[in-house]
Amino acid sequence: MSTAESEHGQRQAHDGPLAEFVALRQEIDRRSNMQHNLFALQLTASAVIFSFALSRIGRSGFLLIIPVSTFMLCARYVDQMYGIQNAGRYIRQVLDSRVPGGLGWEGWIRAKGDSRKAAQFSQARRVVALIVTFPAIAVGALAWSAPNVFWPVHRLAADARSALIVTWVLGLAATIGATQMIWRALRLARPQSGN
Image (cartoon, rainbow, N blue to C red):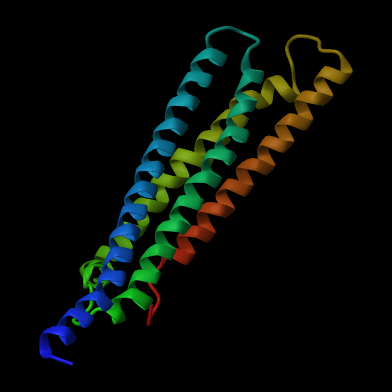
């Protein structure tokens, strides 16, 4: 086998991992864009529902939509976060070693953010942004609607009042679920040695 044939064979052996790397980086970009869209949708939908509910007396029950929509959007957001983490881990742990000299991107990103103070600040910003955007908005909706659910000014039929109470409690459960999802995802996102 000639040297040229050997070099050609080595190049072909690296083409697969490089193509896979490109595809995974595109997947990471797609998921990151989806996260931004979900973030914007949560803020926009919540603002619209709050505006509608607060525009007239007696509409605060519409605020009970927010905890449920928050849970659903938060679940999609966290799903995108897991996908990004898994793609990055695969690049680092599998593809990097299959290319001579390594790919470097994931290692560089981790090394760049490795300073403890910077990592802690970044993590704190992420926690605050996610908690404010998802569960805090839902808590606000639950708090604003609670007086009209539990101590209504207008007389409601017993079944209507029971339905509002059940919906409020389900909203509370959805808000707790969203908070737990975010907390677990952020805990898993922390850099671990050897990954």
